[in-house]
Image (cartoon, rainbow, N blue to C red; front, side, top):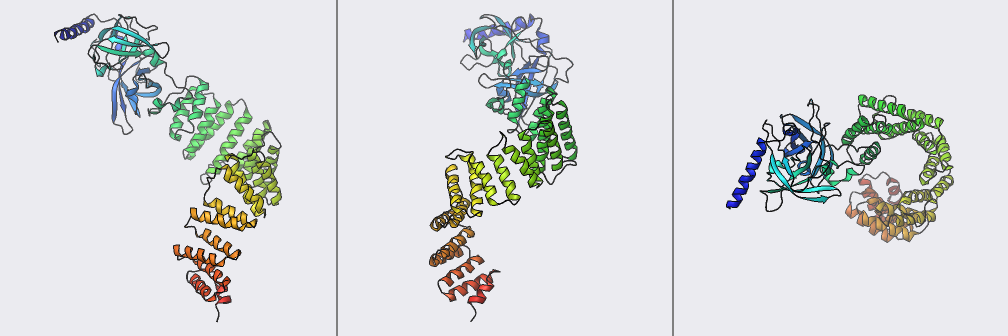
Length: 569
C-alpha cells in the first residue's frame, strides 16, 4: 500500500512539475480541444465527452460511442462557444473513433492540432490535454509503454499515464506539440497508471464512400453524413441513398452535392425529382423548373437533358393528376421528348414518346412509336407488351394483339421464371376472351410454375374460366373448390360452382353448394335465385318457388320472370 501511495504521489508531482514547466505550444493547443454533447431524437442529452480539431476548416475527431444513437450534437470550445456538429465524416466501432465536421462560422479563426507523421518510440514523454474552459495550463504527463500495429500501418499505444473517464478522447501529444493519439480508458486491472490511445491518423483515415450508407456504425448515427471526397464517389453515393432515405433527408444530401459540385447535371435532375416527392407548392415547383433549366444549361448532351425533363414531367402527370402545376402537361412532356429526338433519335426516346402518346390515349401514334422500338435493338418483352396493349385499346382484332403477346413471351427461356409471369397471365386472359381455352390453360399452368405455386384464390377462379372455355369441366370444378377453400366468404365463387354443377347435370350437388353458401350468408339474394333454378332442374317446383320468393324478398331484381314462369297457379 505504501509503495502504491508513493507512486501516485510521484505521478501527481510529475503532472504538477509539468504544469510549472509546460510546453510553449500548450496554451494555443488547448484551444483546439472540445467538449462534445450529443442529443437523442427527443432533444435529451445522450452523452458528453471530448474531441479536438485536426484541421482549420472544422474537421474534428472523437470516440464513436459518444455519437452512437445521436440525432444532434454540439461542440463547445475553451471559450464556452457552442458550435453545431454539421456532418459525420467517418466512424469505426472496432477502435471507437469518429470523424466529423463542426460548423465553425461563429469562430474568427479556428485552431487545429497538427498530426504527427510518425509514432513516438517506447519511453517517449507524452502529454494529454484535457478540455477546460479556464485559462489554466494543465495537462497530464506520461510515457509510451508499448506500441502495437493495427489496421495496417496504424499504431495502438499503451501509455504509462492515469486517465479519468472524463478525459476519454482527449488528444495525446508529443513534445513537438503534434497529436498522435486519442485517449482511451484501460480495460485491465491497473486503471490508475495505465491507459491506451488509438492512432489519431487512423481516426482521420475514416471516410465516407459510395457504399458507406450500409455501414452499421454510420447508420447508428442520426446526424447527417458528409459526402465522399471525390465527385465520382459522391455521385455514386447520392444514387445509392436515393431509395433508402426519406425525401426530406435526401433533400439535404442533394443540397450538399450541388454545393460541392455545382456543375454536375445529375445533381440538379435528382433534386428536381426529389422536390416533386415532397408535395410541392407552386413556389417549390418554380424551384423544380429552375433545377431542370440548370441541368439543361450544364448538360453536354442536350438530348439526354430533354429526355430526363420529359420523363420527369410524364411521371409527375401519371402520379399527381389532381395537383397539376401550371405549364405541366402531357403535351409539355411530348414537346420535351420530341426535342430530344430531333437532336438524336434513340429507341429509348421513341419508347417514352409512345408512353406519353399512350397516356394521351392517342393509340395509333403510340403504336407507331412502339413498332419503331420493336424493330430496334431495344426490343424487349416490355416493349412488345406496350404495343399489344395499345393495339387492344385501339380495337384491333384479338389475333393481332395475341401475335404481339407471342413475340413478348417468346423472348423468355423455358422453363419460365418469375419475370415472365405477368406476360403469361396477360396472354392467358386474352386467350380466354378469344375463346382459346386450351392455350389459356397452358399459360395459366406456366404461370403457376413460374411463381413456384405462390398463387391466390383469384388465380384459381381465372383458371377455371379457361377450363370452362376448353370444356374441361372437372378441372374447372376442382379449381373453383380450391378458390373457395382459400376464400370461403366469397359468394361469387360458390355461385359459380353451383352454376357449373348445374351445367354438367349435377343439380343435387348444386343444391348442396348453395345451401352451404346460404347458411354462411342468409341474406345472399342471388343464392336463393340460383337455388330455385337447381330445384327446377330437379323438377321440384314447390321448393324452387319458395327459393324464388325468398330472393324477391331480399331485393333480387332478376327473379320476377322466374316467378311468373314457374310459380303461377
